[in-house]
Amino acid sequence: MKNLSIAFCLLFTTVSIWSQSQLTIFQVDHLDFMLGLSTSKDSTARFGYIDPTGKFIIEPQYSHGSDFFENRANIVKDSVCGYIDKNGQERLFPQFDQTYWYNNELGLALKDGKWGYINPEGEIVIPLIYQSAGFFNEGYAAVNKDGTWLLIDALGEPVFDNNVILTYNPVFESALIFKGFQDSLPSGTKPSKLGLIHIDGTVLIQPEYTGLAGYFSQGLCWVSKNRKQGFVNNKGIEVIPLEYDELKWDFTEGLVAAKMGGKWGFIDTANTIVIPFEYEGATKFSENLAPVQKEGKIGFINRKNEVVIPFSFDPDWRYGFQEGLSVVKIDGKFGFINKQGNIVVEPVYKSALNFKGGVAYVEFEDGKNGFINKTGALIAPPFQQCWNFRNGLARVVVAD
Image (tube, rainbow, N blue to C red; front, top):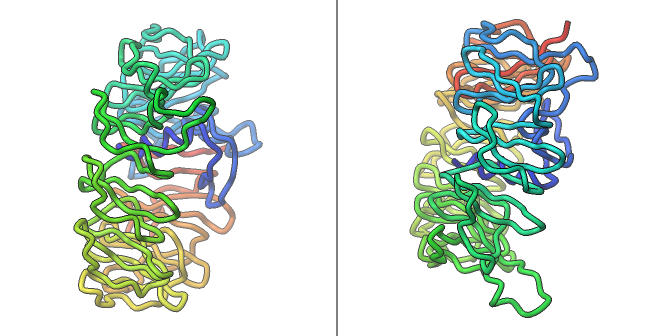
């Protein structure tokens, strides 16, 4: 569910996107997010889909293709948008300029600059009358009409009256981010603070924060104000006071990384310091270990703050154990280690991501991408470009 929050924000803001192991800045719109930017100037490049054995389930034939969201992937074929299911059945919608599907039976459709919603057969369910629109989540979607953000239900009916000032964020756990109430604002001012409101109109978190995650992790929501960060519960009570320089947004294995006085440690949901603030960097616990940085190197500690894997790896954001292995960076190259710190896949790759379903994405020195198994063997010849597996399939790009 949290991925949708990230995805939704991408639709309307200028952000950093990780693409082909390079950080690229661009203005994101629906097409960029759902289908990805063009991978090559080569017009013969085509998207297809493989399974974890490297077998093509859907042959490369599309000019653009998204990941699979549940049973659908967005495609463009002969300049026409549509979707394809995991059986390779296409549905194209030439009557619309653009269409997009996420984890919902209602898809977004664009015609003549206006957005609305259609069913899988292409029938208009909610009229195309909006300047901007986001994906449905929990039966609700945020739309922009005449410069004002509204929350609508699956029938297209507004949930709130015009007094509630909304943002473009989606609903999570029956709540969404809002900016306050029109009748509480001084004349001529614009709202700048954020809070959380339930769809029944109950204010869960008062609109007094400059930053707010918009979802709860172990019953707590990350917030920031006056350059300090903390967590509040669904009653608006600051359970973890806003006294930290930085906090990660999510608790994992009961802990969250926190920064105070220039150093990182870990606290629990009761604000108890479990691991003291003594590290240059920290991310999150996974499989009972957390990557932390000391003297410019990354190592792994356990919950008792014992060093399990020595500080011997180059800093990078990708560290963390999945399926018993973690990506590591040594002398600028990426490989994988086990929980004993032994190298199981040699660091020979330009880039790599952690294992998922027994396979891992890697990038070669020539810029091509591929997938390896846990022995380091390629499951298929390298592709011009590929992405991590999602819902059992991975999109790949090949060129004739």
